[in-house]
Length: 284
Ligand code: GUN
Image (cartoon, rainbow, N blue to C red; front, side, top):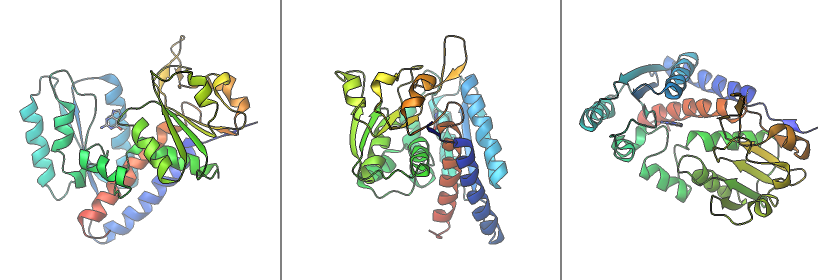
């Protein structure tokens, strides 16, 4: 039987560590603060934002939500970010993506002060990740690394295959595996003979966004399989990018959906916000 990697438990541990460090920081008169911006009424974004606010309260952060109507203009949004950039009680700024049509995701991300960019989406933070000199890691790939570490597998020298090349997950994921000396391949929609490539993986990370896309013929016996997907199957049930029931018997370890990568993303956001508060107070 494979090890089922318990993202909920590992996330709780990370959040408990953040809470402990936050309590110590508060003794010194510093409370980490996170501003979350949500524009429009996308239901999935609303759930994510609520979860982020709840996690902030649990670890002892100050948080504030800026819920703006879908009719908000680019100038209004940039003016809000400018104001948050200047506030010393706000250490992290997160603008929930995707933004409604008419707003420019890229310009908005670039307007966030890099030191407050707890998503690590700003070009300067992305560049730092390439160089291996970063303060913030993008939350989902950082969470995946924690899950991989929890299995005890050594990344160094392993064949690592990432399916998906998004800026948020696939590309930074590949970099983090490379920093730990994995031999990394990124697959995407133009990859020829995908199964032949993925079958080489000792560590396989699926970030495709297609329900049950990874099937047993694509997986090597004994692989560690990490599923970043969050999809609905034909019955409307939550499922990942991996056909879990069929693939699990071949793996040494695998993440479930839900309860795998999902809870880690928010835990890493909490860690980044704490780091931002430390950095901005000259403590790191
Ligand atoms: N939308 C989906 N995932 C994310 C994320 O990690 N950060 C932000 N800001 N928006 C998202």
